Image (tube, rainbow, N blue to C red; front, side, top):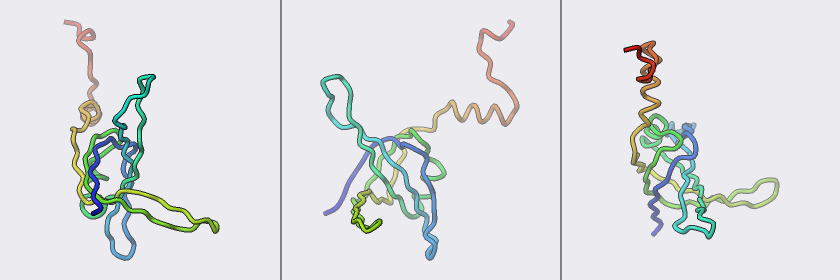
Length: 130
């Protein structure tokens, strides 16, 4: 059985494309996942896992997920083999249809967006004259 479940943070905003002959949406991004041990110097190793999402979930990812968001996903490992300049290569990724956001959009970005749309600036309490 080929089944994988991951929890991690997006390393960049998802890139959305469509399969030309079918029109199926495909989103790609990488997840940063901490390894479960700490080195002697107190740091952790991080794995960067390439992710490919297909179908309606791909559009969800492209529209609602951004770099740094915490997500969980279930999928399967795919090993693709190809040849480049006469050299055989392999590429491993996780293909999934199920992605869940585990945190909310950062409020700071939404507040800044709303303030720009209205035309107001956020003031600190120290800036108010009364």
